[in-house]
Image 1: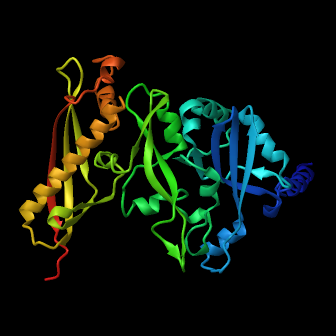
Image 2: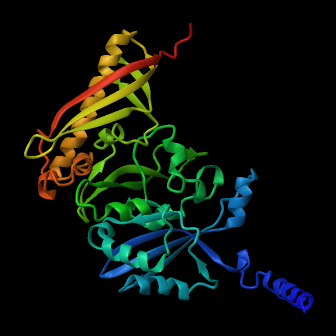
Image 3: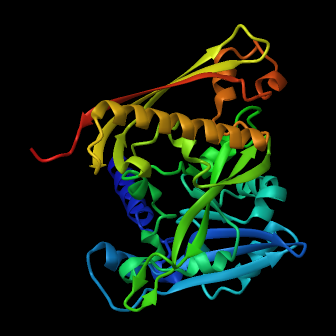
Length: 371
């Protein structure tokens, strides 16, 4: 009897081992990015789809003179669900959302309908937590349609994998969908959503200008609303306080000096004796000299670097104050320091006097000069 049951079980196991429900790769359309806009009283959802055969061929080192095809579909509706259904009904094959790597929001979507999207995405699980989040002021479809350099697909562009670029120059912090939902309802601090633009003034292919997606600045999100936008230069101070900053470059044109900074370290001390929190910021800046045409002394270079870093932090902090936003997230430190020492209102009452001091210590690693 036991032998009979064992044989029967093995027969059933053979049946269960087949992947009967699996769809062939070519029988689905793989969505790799979503764009979201709200205009004319309706939601617009843009779907970017790539050919994975082209992506796989490029990852394997194969080259082709032809640019890989990029599909961009548009759905619209009075609700997000209707906008998604609009494009799915027109698709010749099922849409698969498990490969979405990037989200693009327009300013109108961020300012007025971000909460609706977060609610929808949370219920449908259409977005992975590690999906990158960006904003764009102008045509989303143009940005989604651009291929990368050397005929590579958008899967090799900055918005799909910003980490590779930012490891060499951490000029702006980036966020994921997980960061967005974590910080959206936080009562203190702010979050930066990087904004992109399409530009064709810096590169060209042959005789033709090459359009690229480039970071232009970022929108600031605080207390469930967009408080304003700052350009890339106005945001420089954030990088010195970002724990993920790996490398930065400073140029001081007046003295013809260029330096590289590797992994700056910051400490923010919360002073708890006041009616509102005050902060003391200390930054350690390891420096490598890249350029020194006027042969400035190392001591002076360290002073110049310290002054530049301090200036950038102050400028970004002040730009945030102009927007009534804690762009440096100082209040979050006080919130974690002593949750009940101050009220939420007191934590958010930042002024130009909230920072007691900014101390920057530059240390010289090497001069990069040949002996």
